[in-house]
Picture 1 (cartoon, rainbow, N blue to C red):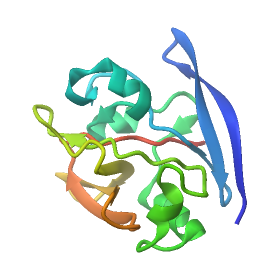
Picture 2 (picture 1 turned 180 degrees about the vertical axis):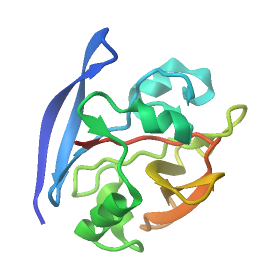
Picture 3 (picture 1 turned 90 degrees about the vertical axis):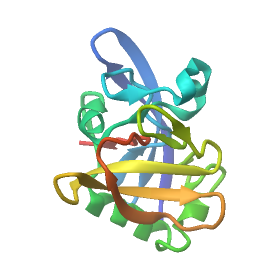
Picture 4 (picture 1 turned 90 degrees about the horizontal axis):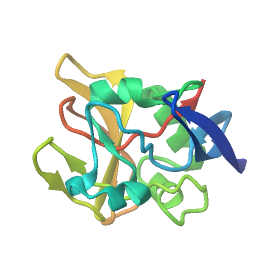
Amino acid sequence: MRYILIIGLCLQGMVALCQYKTITIGNKIWMAENLNRDIPGSYVYNGQPELAKKYGRLYTWEAARNACPTGWRLPTASEWDELIAAVGNENNAGKQLKANGSSGFNALYAGYTNGQSFFFLESMGGFWSATEYDQMHAWYYFFTNKNDAFTKSYFNKNYAFSVRCIKK
């Protein structure tokens, strides 16, 4: 297993230069922090901008598909599966991938939203994949503060979760 932590530059829209921490796990370069790009279909937890600085924004699946900066993209479910396999398995990968884990991935408990109410800040986090499950659902990966699992499941595309991008 090889982990490399670097600082990557990206363009956020055409307006501002932003920096995202990145990490190489396996043969893929991942963002090592949650995306914080203000686009339609994205939300700041409870409308509190200071929370976006730490946790990033939450994105509906449709917004997530278009949220990554130029040169980056939303990872597929297969790429999430590869990430999990690189640090363990679904039952224990959370220990490595969560904040303060040895991988440097730094997954945060950013909660989620249905667009009206916000849920589980500081106790649950989830990331969209680019892979659809069916017309109404897409695959996502979630973790909680209750155990070390990093679990694959599907969820309604209209809910909003965090986004991590992968280098093209």
